[in-house]
Image (cartoon, rainbow over all chains, first blue to last red; front, side):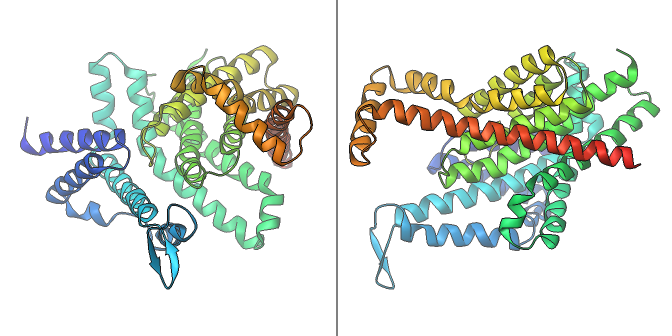
Length: 195
Length: 196
């Protein structure tokens, strides 16, 4: 086993270990170690956390929520502020960043062929195909959900009209997902993929 | 089952499972984080919608179970922390949907029934998980708290019954709305297909 392969496996274990703990020193420590290893293997993954505007709302929520919830242990501009709530929120942001970066790293480092081959070795050809398909399709479906939402909101700028016709949006994402599934099915059929 | 159907049975549940998993992972985590009221019922309703829509494309036995399994894997990778309880909820909901959709077939009436029943999953789940986590004594504590709240809000002689009716009613309302949404979505899809 090469050192790089060992480090990749270690990142996966640290990531799972970090998820197992709620936000505390062990979970954050394991997460930080996973990020250090990722940066040593390929630093570009650290910057793959999506557009900044997606982070603005959670960051604002984490900063302003302690004014409303939790025991007020401090004051900001003369208003009671909960440092403990801020710590919990900051931990949540860290977990989100760790999650996005590590899943991008795992998806980026795995190839469909490798997953299917390894699953076949363990006598699970169907499971391997499903896992490989899920890994390769997640980003496409995620992008489709967000893009459909943007287009949906363009024609329904008020939140009331957006909620009133939510079935149109749900129908659109279901239809887009079904279209993707149809295309993949056709491709598998034409390529004679062994199920 | 011919080859094309076998391929659809692998691909469609996986793709719809990803869709459900992503919604659970991001919307679910967020709703639970801000402690949105009846977040579990809303997520159960969304899950039931996805299961019914998936079944409208692959009306075969086990399709819902495969969809649920993919969603569970995504839930295990949830942002907050690994949470067993929501994963169990997804699997119970999946089994209910599989049983109902297999027994009643893929049609608007069965979609409506499935959504209504699935949205009620949170009720037995709450009692079982509370019992397992805290022991049988927790229900006495719940009863006392509810009686005190009932007295404050003047909810009559039997506030406990009133709370249960409201609680079940809201879950059922979410299920009915989900059922109507599925029928509307399937209808829109059918109309589009006929236009083509």
